[in-house]
Image 1 (cartoon, rainbow, N blue to C red):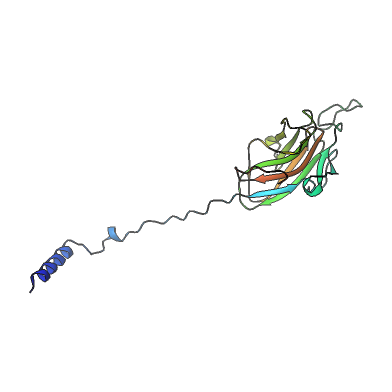
Image 2: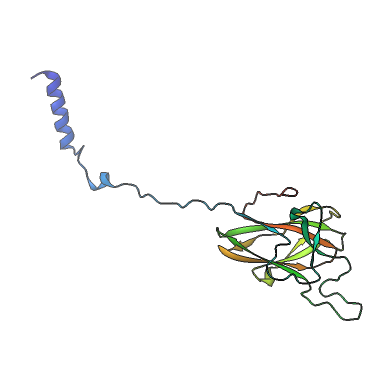
Length: 197
């Protein structure tokens, strides 16, 4: 027998005796593959102000405006009053005095921000109240910024946790002298709307 062949046979016999090549429970185990679902997609819903659900509660009304998305806006004319204010007859305006309601669907549950394209008359007419899914305890103020008589985007403070399916956003009168062109509800934290979007 040739010397290289004898060496190969001896090496193979040694490896088999040492257990190399044998499958043991330790060598047959495979790593567990954990299925990680896809990360949720960012989702954005755009709502035209004039496309409210149900009735528009006075003193909110529709106004045709050049330069508005869709050509129309929801407005509260200056001097129409705001919730809790005194009326000329000595009474008070009710705590809910003017509202537009929007119902929209989302497919991805998550944390959402709300943006509004708005026009303010002045510092006494530069905000609205937002209520998501009828939760008055989580009502937030949209606005109170210092940009007047110019269309611009403002974002509501904080975020809203939304479930997949139908959700409801109410826009309530807080001050008169305002116009609302459109709303954006988005889970994209980097989204900053551009005029007029």
